[in-house]
Image (cartoon, rainbow, N blue to C red; front, side):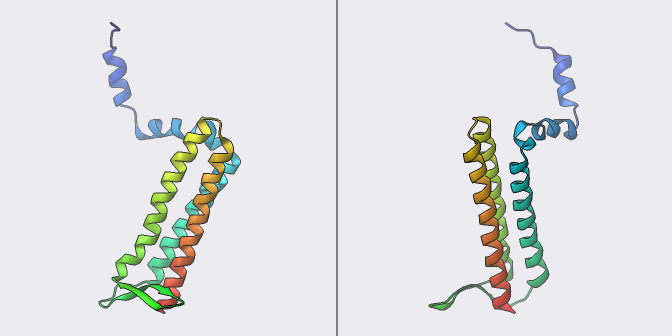
Length: 139
């Protein structure tokens, strides 16, 4: 049986958060300019989505329009807080695609990794357009 070095284990537990996170971002994946730019743009678009909704959607007591269809008109009303579901879904999909992208990049599937990041950026842009349309319809 291998002997466990208790001093080494306690040293690992005492490491700060910075020293635990730094190796994650030191991976080869984050050295790729394409991956960095797609991650940065996706994050900026999602933050812009949150900010736009925060600025234009104010807390009110009556329902607001959440979805409008050209053929049927208004087809979904709801509480003002429900508008923030769009950027939240964006974050969830962004994280899922990012971790899948890292997985494929480690397996030397660079094209699949970049396609996942590009799809994530397109999703973020689509959700931003949806949020802007909700803002326009309500004002």
